Length: 165
Image 1 (cartoon, rainbow, N blue to C red):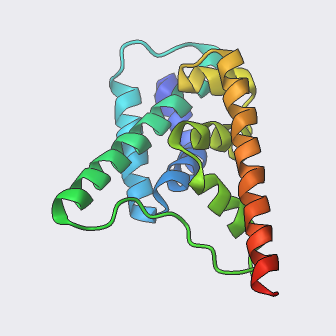
Image 2: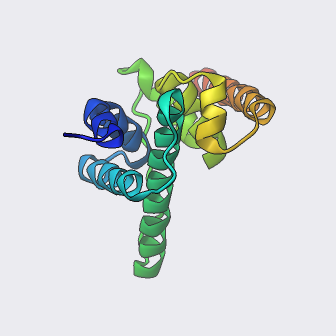
């Protein structure tokens, strides 16, 4: 018989993987992050009940992904390699690439809020719980991140127009 956290993990494994992949951009790394998040969730003594479980678990996955990226960045710096890699833009053959490039250019806290709100379709209140922020702070950061992304889009459009002149 599965307990409620085990059941939640099994039922939402695809969602957890998708969120982890959004950070790592690598299948194996995303699976490592999900494994770490599940382990963290199963070994906690303070899991919430009911509707609170979803944002709590998203917070665990985000935390595990960020920890993984920090470790990878530290390892890359020690080994003399490059730091984190983002999705490269490769022209107009995929419209989502421009969106992902804009999301990847955001600073970490803003990127997390955008991913949870729009890619995972969480309510603002749940995003706030997952990121341990107040709702008002979450809204402010969300709108600031969207404004930054619009700026990236305008810069990209300007660059395309000046390149063709």
